[in-house]
Length: 526
Ligand code: NAP
Image (cartoon, rainbow, N blue to C red; front, side, top):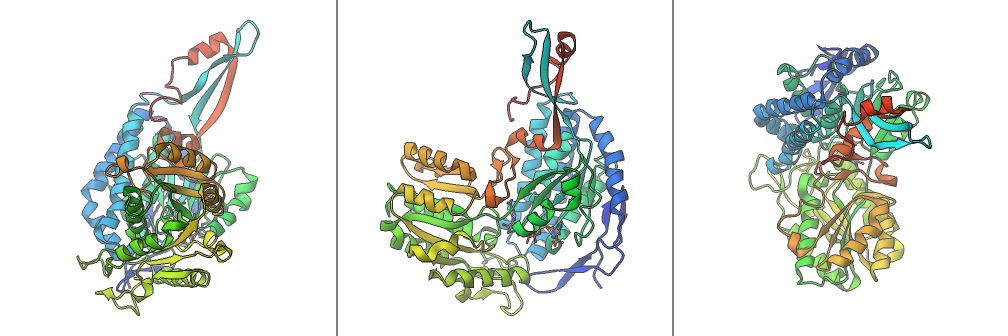
């Protein structure tokens, strides 16, 4: 039997009480390790995090905690090669795709370490200016933000076992809040390995970082009023979490990042042959194929002027035809595997549902695999669909296929494009391709109420833009409506989730003490 990975809870390594759930290599089908959360005392573990980890972290200043993040960066860098091996084995990703997860995690931690240092030797943050309330100005109000006294529970999706942990843990630890991480079972190994390395390096105080791998049963019941939960995953699981008794009755703050039908929009000025047209084609192909389309931010719907529909379909399909798919150990492979055979089944079922309402412009199921057995491997080629008939396209705005699948949609005039994009009911990101900066600004503002991020690609940004689906710590990650309604990252704004805000009202003698004692919330990076 393969190794049963231990969980780190209550300051010690503990194994679950049964043989555990196996984790597989999604390309070879071989068993790698096992995980189990059966029989663990989560109530005691959470109490330990709150009572030991919390006070130890809060005793430090923001600048001191920022140095912890820098030390975590060093510990992860020292073990980086092993993470790539684990990702290749357990997630089936090529080296560049593993880097999106692993190096993305390290970069995000480093960025929060730099921002955190700028907050200095403080224990709390000011929020806005002192405001007089008495007519003569002698009684005032001052808002402050202080770290919450609970723990931060992170329940993550399978697609980013590294970045998914650290993009949440960086602002939480910087805020002084202990972390309990629960990775998705299918790819939990990388998260567990990273936590193990950070624990072994002795960087964090006891109770500051815990990990529990395996089933989610019993995860939410021990939560207390000052705890927070940050969830990334499907809308169905999100609904279960939101309505859980402990969350509802104890007013536990919850952040949800759920599924999303992100869009790419070619504005009417961009015709075939233009730079903007080519930039859209390149970005759509990149988004469909990076991590085999298993990115919450990946482009799922591509909107082009009706006059460009045929040319765009041809251009994207031609590039997709050159994508090699299969075993990521083969250096000729551009696109690796889905994370599991279960996901492979989900992608096939979702694609079949879309195909009933769309034409196939490039068929991924027909792509031969390199070095991979189609009966075993969770590999599948990229599929481009086209829905030129409006009445049939409804399902395209509703079904998220979490894999290398996108649908091309024609529009008649910009208002029609905006209206169709909004049928997605709220998304994480839309990208806009045009040479007309003023029009791009208008389109971005028009879509800002239904998206967390608008990524504008004009020709002058061609070489420098960070990518439609790349989540950078400087910008907000999250989206309204269907996307879950959550907000992560966006500089030091992310610390808000891990702080409580209070107004302190008093005479000048009290509020003067607070003046100048902390950087304000609107300092650089906020
Ligand atoms: P999922 O099935 O919802 O699982 C997400 C996490 O929730 C896993 O850790 C899972 O644990 C856990 N979980 C399952 N049931 C639970 C329960 N009753 N209570 C508490 N936790 C529970 O989602 P997934 O299949 O891993 O991820 C795919 C989805 O995530 C896609 O729809 C994608 O759009 C979305 N996603 C969104 C973002 C974003 O940032 N917006 C990023 C990535 C993915 P187990 O694995 O042990 O079941």
